[in-house]
Length: 424
Image (cartoon, rainbow, N blue to C red; front, side, top):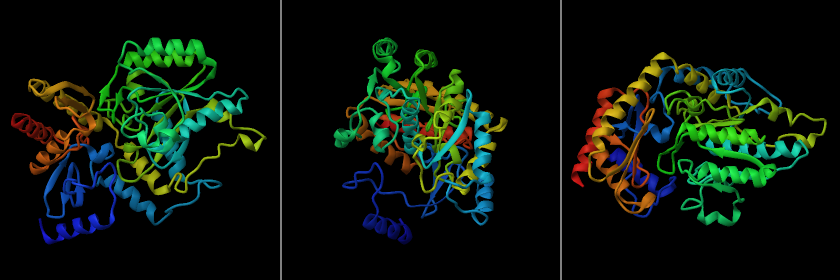
């Protein structure tokens, strides 16, 4: 460690508080100085392959010139303006671009700041929709093992457990369905709709992948069945595609893969290519129309200071344009490399439930402790020593590389994983 990196770490430890980090006994931080393509570069000049796209956001890779150019163009032209009473080209253009590519007949874009706020917007939008129609409904339905964010409403529709226990008394109650891969899920939903269908405002799901729960995959048929049942009862369906959006499951959106058209979609993470924070809640026209009224109390009273920030919107437009045939080919390659290597990983005695969907690969280690299992920290340290940045979810190991990664670079990550498994 050089004097420069040591000084940075010491200064950080004196003044900063990191997310999802137990600072007592934490592993040494990585002093990142720059990033390019699939690599993080630390203050000592060491390159680390970013195997998780820096928390699933940097979809095209770091420092992509097209996104950087869009940001540079707008930062001196229009840095920010209030979006209540004003508009601008980056926001309107991004809305038009997104609506052309989103599944179904979504027609309105509401901007916010991140994934949690996109979910908060969706929940409030859904509940007030029924209020404005004069038929109030307040029952919200969510899935077991769900994770939708860390704000109060998003935590309320997330699974009760380690992340939410301190705030139990602050969270609103929801109807909880069994895990979507369980044979009990659909019958439980059917019973709920028969008994309380006229009280249910909305059902929220993470389509095909419950990511923070340990990259739990579930099937397209189950998603299609949930959508049919919910929408046949005139109930709203929210698809939280904060993680699955922008190609993670193969197609641009998981709902597209499953041929499902939700009433509301939540987006963030890969939206700007990992360059700037931005959230989107996309809704169908009937929801928007329910807020049109001479009675101003029907207004959707929600907003953020940085709503539709022009620079973030410009970055998102540039990122969206990068999803072309070349990006499709890269994602196909990543999925193929995952499939080949996970077949070999599956033979290790400590590996459970190896799985691949699109550019996502994951497996569990036969270690106790779940999310709090120390095996994840051991693997992270082992990987760092070998030039790979990875952050397991406790005993769940996953890879979500940026789409610019090469087959050889991805193979080197699997080689590191083989070394770790052999050392256990």
